[in-house]
Length: 188
Ligand code: SF4
Image (tube, rainbow, N blue to C red; front, side):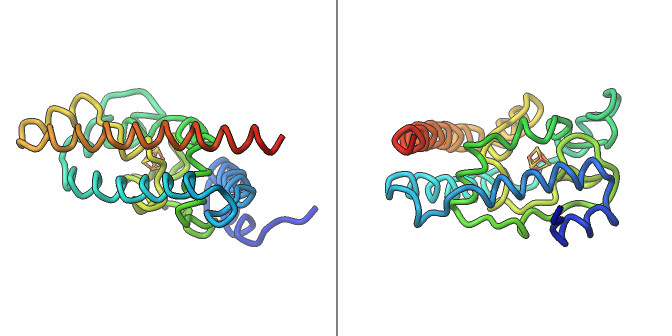
């Protein structure tokens, strides 16, 4: 059985569970069509999602809520002090629509860089947060504001602007899902 070199290296450097989950993700990513292989409307929606991820991340900026939100929680969420919402099962953030959107907006297998440290929740969660740049994060991850973070940005004064970007992203994401589902149905 052929094993990719990247996976062998991950097996040497990473906890086995993280290495194996990442291999499956990279294979799923590679199996998705790129932007030139899908209808234009779908490719435009994935490009819009990339723009919104960047805008939303910039609008949220530096925050303190995410640094200590997991303190006192049971593992895997509480394994690190911060990033409680990243304590989920990797595949729950990386559904097929997210992977398809990322592939179309240019994410490659080698862009899925891993953190150093224990595996506690999502494969990309490390002791200091997510190891991915916003270009390669699922839309869900960028759009999700837990109650603490929600309160923080509202106290800062830019909550309404951020909420509007979240709503816009949700609408584009739903459009992307519908377009992708139609393409998959048409190809059956
Ligand atoms: S991809 Fe990053 S932000 Fe999303 S759940 Fe995983 S660690 Fe958290």
